[in-house]
Image (tube, rainbow, N blue to C red; front, side, top):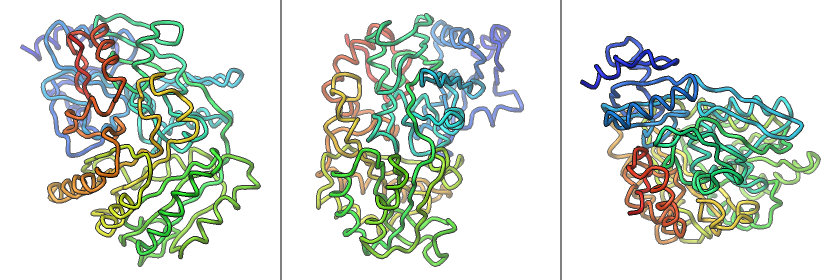
Amino acid sequence: MSSNVIGDIRGNFHGQVVMPEDGEYDEARSVFNAMIDKRPAAVIRVADDGDVIEGVKLAREHGFELAIRGGGHSGPGFGTIDDGIVLDFSARTTVEVDPSTKRARADAGTTWSMFNRATHEHGLATPGGIQGTTGIAGLTLGGGIGYLSRKHGLTCDNLISARVVTADGDLLTASEAENADLFWALRGGGGNFGVVTSFEYQLHPVDIVHAGIIIYPIEHARTVAEFYREQIKAAPEEFGVFLGFHQGPPVPFLPEEWVGQPVCVIVGMWTGDPAEGPGMWQPYLDVAPVVGSMVGEMPYPALNGAFDELVHKGLQDYWKANFISELSDGAIDAYIRFGHTVPSVQTSVHVYPIDGAVQRVAPDATAFAYRHANFAPVIAGFWEDPADNEANTRWVRDLAEALRPHAEAGGYINFMDADDQARIADNYGGNYARLAQIKAKYDPDNLFHVNQNIKPAS
């Protein structure tokens, strides 16, 4: 009956409707995380807002589960669903930039590499993650942490408005002036409240940046981590850098004998006076022996996409995270202990700073509550071979458990995995009750539940 229903109304959509009997089905159902292997009843490649309204109506009236796919980068695989409907925005990637107002509007299928290319033509950018392949939609709705966050805040702090299709099939504008409660919830509350079809952002002058990737032997990780802890606390907000633990990556500036070896890294960029760039990086080149480094000027989009080739679609993914207020000695101990055994060259253990502009926004001003935390770490496990799933998933969980005594109860929603649903209230802290009330207003039957789900208040 499911396929009959969809087949009967295929002509209602302007975009392509891909079903199991179609030759493109396997490609259409695939997502970034190869661990996810689901078979939707249909993937609707939406062409316009009318297709979104029709897709929501189809799911609601015929009892289909509904998944929304922006960039398809979701670690838990929330961009697909067994036997349900996927609204796929991959055909909707238009970015319109107005340099006079320093604003941009982008469709929900846009990735950050697409967005950054469009805005960079005008010497502008907005905070937008660490990877260019990440979609703007999921990152923005979960908060949005990236290289520019210390200076310009979270991605959601730079959201001016959004067009949203609600569970009733209504097309609304959400902003400070219209549907303000919905706008509040969208800024950090994930995809719980409707299908956002486009986003309007505030942009900032960002053009050529002074970037750095510095790699140290793991034996010097304590010295580097302790230096980073103090330096980032005092650094100008134009200096957006993170601490990481990796296997040595296959990059031209790292000697071959270090590829695959446990290393500590510092990565980021300086967006202040270009003449001050070398001086900002020199302390990190001096603090401990360096086995590989790349420091110099580059366009911002180049740094934002620097890891896209290494961490590509088709890997096995598993993630964990907790916010931390301070990078304590105990946390550093845990990072170093597990840093010796990072299981793959793609696995990324990063400590992102979220002080500065992020903390100048009140914790109840948006749905993103953890404004007091100084860091948003992630344990992002990526690897090639499914045979390693059990061992590598355990490694991610064990590191998360070792960090727990040194961390906040909640974590960044975009770094949660599918088995983190029980943490949802902790992840939103004091904002959870209000989010549940707004959920009850806009989606009382929880149509939008293929996500880190906020249940409607009763």
